[in-house]
Image 1 (cartoon, helix red, strand yellow):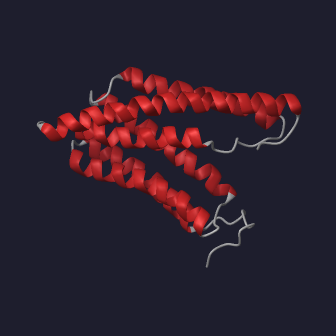
Image 2: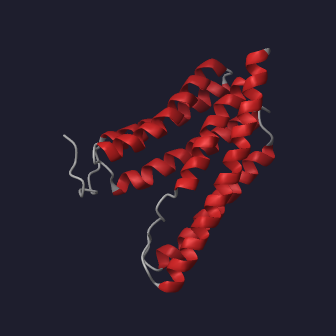
Length: 194
C-alpha cells in the first residue's frame, strides 16, 4: 500500500528497494567488467540507468518520497558512476581525466556538506540540472562500453556516448555551481533549503 503523501519517514518503499538493488548491482557490474563479460556488464549498466529513472517516477506517483530515498538514490548514482568510470578507465575505455573531472566535482560537493551540517542542514535538495547531468552520464557510460564493438554499432555508440558524456560533464558542473550558490545563500541568510 502506498505511503501517504506526507509520510517521508518510511524506510521500506518500492523506490527505496529499487535504489538498494541498484547498489547491489554495483559490485556485480565491476566483476562482469573485470572479467571482460562486456555484454552482461552493458545489460547491468543499462538496467541501473533505467531503474534510476523508475525509482523517481514511482516515488512521486505512489507518494513514497522518503528521507531515506533522498539520500539513497543519489548515493547509488554516485557510487555507480564512480565504479563504472574507474572500471572503464582501468580497461582503457575512457581516459583517466574523465574520472578526475567527475570525482573532483563530487569531492567539492562533499566538502560543501561540512559547513551545512555544522549549521544543522542536511544535504541540499536535488536540482533538476544535477539530475539531468547524472542521467546523461548514466547513458554515456553504457554507450562508451558498447563503443568497444567494431563496426557501425560501435562507431555510433562512440559518438553518442561522448555526446552524452560532454553534456553530462557540463550539466554536472553547472549543478555543482547551483548547489554552491544555494549553500552560500542558505548559510549567509540562515534560512532553510528550498
